[in-house]
Length: 399
Image (cartoon, rainbow, N blue to C red):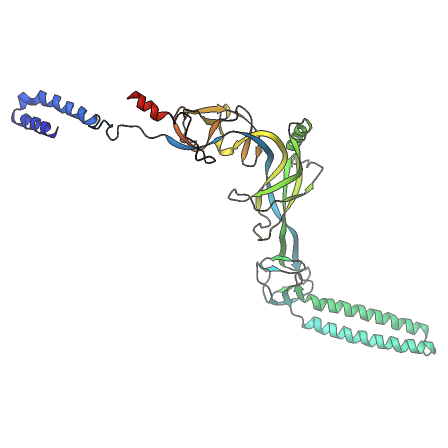
């Protein structure tokens, strides 16, 4: 072929008028020959189309399904203590590390104790003197050395002295501010040298008990009514206990299952919702009070239902549909009817039969009518399609 092209080019150069038409026809013929199959019968490079797109599929089947509802909630500490100054004075020392987990009774702040120590010592001395006087009057009363009125005045004074001592002792103890509960201590709201306790009790720091931790959420009264009606009609089965789970910010489930504590029997007239509360173990302090979370609550159970992953369901103006894969590996859209959620899956109430293969991952590559290469992660050893196995005999017969 190269030799022929060289001769034609040489003749065109030497005899342009004679070889012009012949050369053009020969060059066109050579181009067609070059684009044809090679000598070994295989098509030339670039002649074939792209291979079928690979998609993950699942085979639809019925199974028991827990009906779930995802709701917005907010975390709340089981106990929160705002530590305040109970006595007036200047903060001498801060005795804790911010953000640390502490026990009840742990010293947090030291308020200058000198004035309160002096008052407690004076009250103690006064109480001792009043008690000694009372004892002498009691001995004299028996021999009528003092009057009954004098004796009763000594009793009153002794009681007053004891009360004054108790008050002075409490003030002295309160100069050392301690944690009232176990929990995680926040940041200090004052610094050393600050005057606290004058007038109102000054806030010093907050402590949150975070293990366990509450999550507060609410559910629409309409949804609860619909669920009760379905249970009453026998369409679904009420669960023996409600299973409560938390969805973390990355969409994964929190490792601990919660326990439902409160379900109010009244509806909020402003929102139309019913208040709910659950409790979760929080040993690693991963859940922080005040955070917004998603709560997944299991409320009932279907004995047999078809559930498909949420990512496999698509929506258009006509409603929901999935992409099915035929035995010939062709993509066909199938309209479906969807009901409640079961975790991250839709419960399909109509339009889908058991045994149907649907596209789960790769829906962008699976165009209706296109041929795809299905892969079932649940059964990797399964053949790509029922029609793929007889391919070899068919090609042999064609020869």
